[in-house]
Length: 195
Image (cartoon, rainbow, N blue to C red; front, side):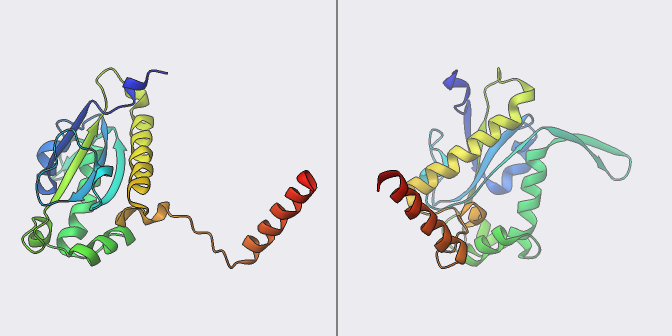
């Protein structure tokens, strides 16, 4: 296995609000991204999973032609589109999904919240960029792999998932009929095997 191709080539940190100038430049092929509230800009060698105030980890790959004003447009990264989808609910407090609602409930919304004026913790965007020699046709798989590594390491580090990635939690109800039944089956199988 060529493990060095799995590691991020660049770990890029900047204010979340600067996403328009970064996403279409360094993340045009794709990136795993994270949103982190932190007092100061994280060091360039630090990964998002090292910060408990990491509130979301996601991924996106590729680019598209964004038709603007009905006739002319420009090529944009899908990472840029994802950041736009995060930006609107975090600024207006409207729309979004359960991940945005969880983040807003904890940190607030609006320019003052995102820039850290309210909490003293500005929102940082981290872009994990693949090596240039990673083939274009595997960028999507690379970003997915990095996303899963970051989510897994975050849960190992802090014992819970990020606020915005609550859907990664196991939804098993220990009191449900199927949980009881599976427990009975496991006990029966162990008795047969070792009894």
